Amino acid sequence: MNKRCMQMSGCMSSFGGMSPEELSKGLHQLKSEHPRLLAQLECLFNLTKQIEADSGEETFGELISKVKEFKAALDPCSEREEGVLFPMMGAYIGTTSGPIAVMEYDHDQAKAKIHEFLEKADSSEAEGEKKNLASLIKHAYYILTEHFAKEENVLFPMAERMLSDVEKEELYQKIQEIK
Image: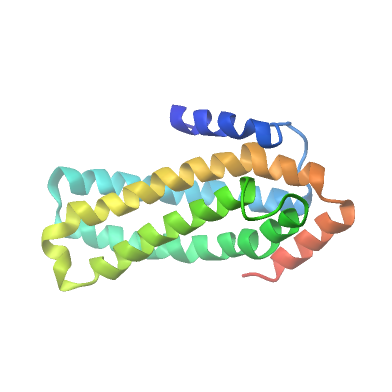
C-alpha cells in the first residue's frame, strides 16, 4: 500500500478503528475480491504509464480491452457493496454523510472516470487524446486503491462489530445472489 493510502485509512480510523478481528464469511468474501481487482488495476496503471511515454496505438488498444475486463469484474463487486452492505450499515450509521457516503462517492467517481474513458476511447476523437484519456484511468486507479484500503482497514471491521450474527448471515446470502 502506498503512503497516500495509509494516510487516508488512518484519517478514517476515527470512524471505527482498525481492529485486526476475523471477518465473517460475507465480509471476508467482499475483502477477498480486492486482490484480483488490485492486480488488474496495477496492469491498467502500467499501461497508462506506457501511453504517457509513447502513446502507441497497440498499447492504447490494450488499455481499452483491459478497462472493459476490469469494469466487468468491478461492477458485481460494487453492486454487492452498494446493494447489500452499504444499506445494512446505513440502517445504523446513515448514508447521507459519514463512511457510507464516502464509500459511495468513491464508487461514483471511479465509475464516472471509467465510463468517460470507455465512451471517448471508442470514438474518433480519441486519436489526439490518448494521454488525456489514459489519465482518466490513472485517476480511477488512485481512487480505487485508496478506496479498497479504507474498506479493508475501516469499513469491513466496522461492519463486523456493528452487524448482528443474523445480519452477517443475511449479508452473505444476499451477496451470493449477485453474480
